[in-house]
Image (cartoon, rainbow, N blue to C red; front, side):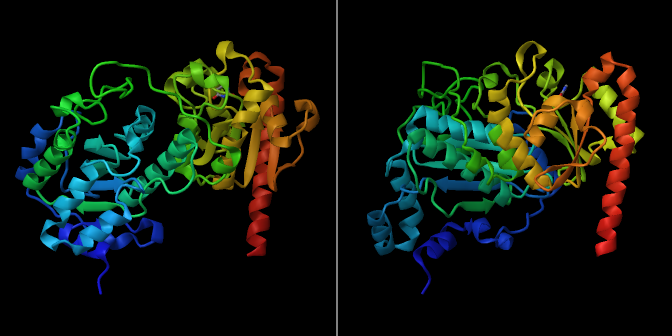
Length: 439
Ligand code: URA
């Protein structure tokens, strides 16, 4: 016998995202439309994107719900009802606000909205979205290599962790299953956008979509969706994850966690967290100290004067930013007035760098300057006493050299830094030879 949820899926023409179970191919291949039909879409969006129904990943109508949004009594009743009325009933149940409806709380809705906005334009295009009290609808177009299942997994994991923490509760936050439907044409696209847009109106939460602050139509960037209308307040800052939680994150989750981290006071003044740049599978990892003013503005490590020198240093050993090398800092947010990060800031940020290294598994780490050296070695010492040796960071070879900003001021040590780079290259080649010999 088919399970109830399977029946719903069939009836609603929805396919489950079985990503949690590792079966990705449930998401059907996108239908192609004639180019002329794509042109018709230009009127339905206003954020500078062309919705490409023919895009690699297609456009999806996606729904995910709070774990308690459909209680057992509702499931039992739905099981008894006629299949043709079920989808309507599901909507009615959801819109009646079953369960705790914690997405009604501005701070919880804000967690979801901030998470959605974090990678908008980069990993996906959001054609429309709404955060309802107990569920979320998206009209979403994954971009490039970003699979819908990965996007959703990351979104649900992150928001569940943050929301549970904010609510001081444990357990399932979202229902395990999510529902997606590939949009196959212009009419369907328009219908989905209208459906999402009008959801707050149907649920009597607003008189018009623009009055509902937790949805695309009424959302204004930079303000908290504190009420469906009226009062506008700054977005709430999110509590920090614990080191153990950070140690479980994948790359997208880690970036997102760093972007919203409030574990130390530096978050209050940052333009953005500066996570790192380069090949995430790189053999070489270069670790600096903390972003400066330009890095804070641009969101990339070592883009100022010291960065130019670092690029030259990399070039001298046939490496390039973004190729075979990754550049990160001990601390991800800018300390004011170019001061060194203090011990508390280094400690608060340590789980992020540790997790980057664990995910990357570089063959060799080069610490640039004393802050990075002390952080990675876990003991205080001068650069002069640490140079020229292969040290160890949890089993990964570690070489210490001077910080490029210091080298800009101290020409005499440039020659020593050059020696250090040659030593690093020679060490790396030795490691490669060793690895080849043991294969
Ligand atoms: N100095 C650092 O240590 N890191 C940067 O990203 C820039 C300057």
